[in-house]
Length: 403
Length: 141
Image (cartoon, rainbow over all chains, first blue to last red):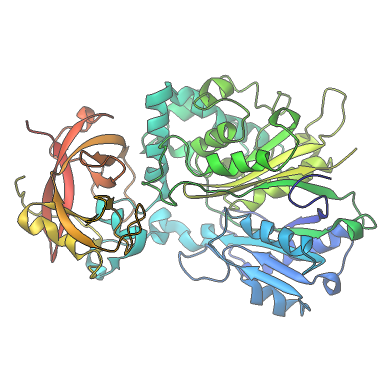
């Protein structure tokens, strides 16, 4: 079998904790809820787990960004590990999962528990986003690294940084807010059938167009919603996976490249971001093609990022994502490329990359219930893409599950 | 390149180091200063210790004209922390001398509605404590 992992790596189980705006729960408990659910879903026990991979690893800042690190879960479940990884400098948030896949492919581990936990909803509390932003003025804080180039200009958030990519895309290709709105409206529509969604109430184009602006062309509904929640995925050796509870989801390819400068503002093409190279490299490593994909779960931390992924993954041409999603029919649950079937991060919460991977598996296993994608023949999809990240960090996965 | 008064707004300032001192102190003399390779002429921004074009290490600070073109921008309405005055324009500008040197900045001294991609701008500094923050305003020809 072709592909970077030669068919040797599979996803065998998934799990997710409660997800909510402000759960006020111990983030390690949320993490263990997700991890134990994923282990059970695979038909394994903690004694079978011999690897851990997580993003971003344990860290205290920004508040709520990391609910647990490798050692927290390792010790809480008394795991016996042959390999582990936790870190933030990987391609996209699910780059950590790809590291787990490499560990399995090379024989360093047999069953890797991959997870991501956030509690940004609780961390920001009633004070809103400013509570978790680097504060201004009188604290004496001085910015270093990349932050020194943006914080003096009142821009501590990725919202204005990504908005500038969207604005350039609008300028070069004639993209409109009405087109971009379809990412948010489609997400909201799908969220209605996701019991864990944060926002399930209908959203109209008028609601979208009259919402307050955050950073033009982004309004409130172009920005994902901070939440609390944990997601876990089990990555296993395919030869072992065949005897487990569920049909293995084979990892056909991984897109991990970044061939331009790793920067928000020095990236060569201000309409693409690094998702361009992640998408290109996904297809360079497989015989499969974009037209084979039956469902796409694409990172929507901001609506425009999902549009950039559609182009990067070759679902439409460069600059053509606006017309591609116009009217929303093509990306709807019953459209030719169902997109963000669980409501994405825009409506179902900023689970930060791992939610898309989880949902791709839900769809491939036919567990989507009211939001399940069905092919023209009435069967569940066999091939899905899950993408995570934007700006200077991104990766994507091509996953299959034969019927 | 005129100096304008320090406004009473709240800004997070950069930490000045030996590596970036030329950039954040250049405005003291009204000039935008970048690190440049003396072997091949390439300008390095953000400044790093080895020229990525020729791998040369003979690098020195050098003033540029401060003239640039707006590559993209956003009108930011969200006050990301208390005291931040909104709306304001955040932009990425490309320097005349070397367009792949981009600077994220605010466009100042002009109505919000006038800012556009392709707009010609020039640097203007404001002093805060020990640093001179480069902003850009409409070019005066």
